[in-house]
Image (tube, rainbow, N blue to C red; front, side, top):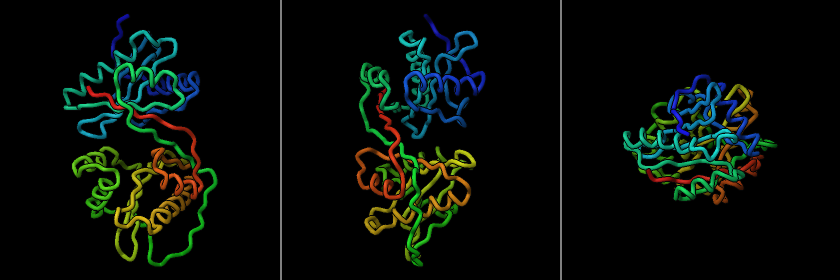
Length: 276
């Protein structure tokens, strides 16, 4: 059967399909609800949304992809039609690869991507705050302050150094995730900026910590622990007590830091890269 790519008719269509797939597959993969209708692709059968793909252009040459197909419409070309449509637009924009993200419990995700000769990149744990360890000994020589426009060069450089991105890549990523619903703080030790930590304010009660990095030359001094706990305290003061974050599974130091602060692993997500 041939499928036609359409625009999303209603945001609730996507959320209902997301729930249908997660319930059926016993996974937890979420679309970025604020981005629905921005850079996405939909396939309908009548009034029912049966396939959906969302692309996040976090790099000029690479898009991150989330995709859902109704269980009753799998192996009927729905996913391929979605991906082919995204590929066509991506190639026009100079994109070279897609990064697919799927729940580690997904039985079909890995098989499809391996069939397409996609390459495994990494696995991340999603961690949620279970029992906050907020106590922190007072340190007059350390503070966590809100970032200003003047901090932008420091933020971009620090994130680039921490995550192995070239300066232009780090700037592109920062621009892609720059929005009014994100807050950025700077860790300052003895008057000198040493790290950056950000949070996406998902709702009035929930937040997601990300882009958390301490300068390489300042690591091993306990600054990361202080920044994390102070950030959690700041979020708590705004009523946001449902806090999550993601970390690569092989980052042992970060895992221990987060566990010490009261975070626990919820599930894992695999990342595969597909050259287009």
